[in-house]
Length: 96
Image 1 (cartoon, rainbow, N blue to C red):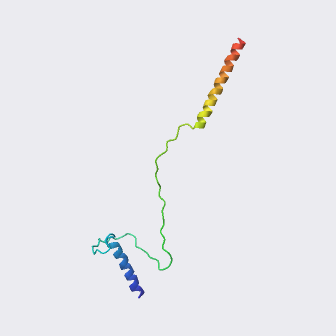
Image 2 (image 1 turned 90 degrees about the vertical axis):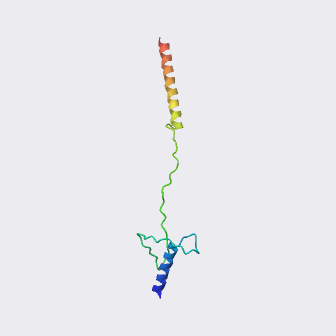
Image 3 (image 1 turned 60 degrees about the vertical axis):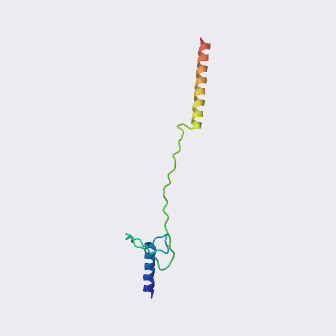
């Protein structure tokens, strides 16, 4: 009896794959494609499906060559160097 039920289940699974999904009352059948993998349905337990994460590509973001902080530091350094040069020029003028 169990063997007959298993055969009927296999036949129903094949019929579901063979008939077109959009025409449930139609008798037109698609040719069955042989799969490399065979289906294994467990007799007990739960069925599960493994979800494999895939990469999602997004638009590249343009980054500035220099950060705002780096630009501020460079500006402060340039101002400090200019102040030192002015002080040196002023010292040389006093000495002469």
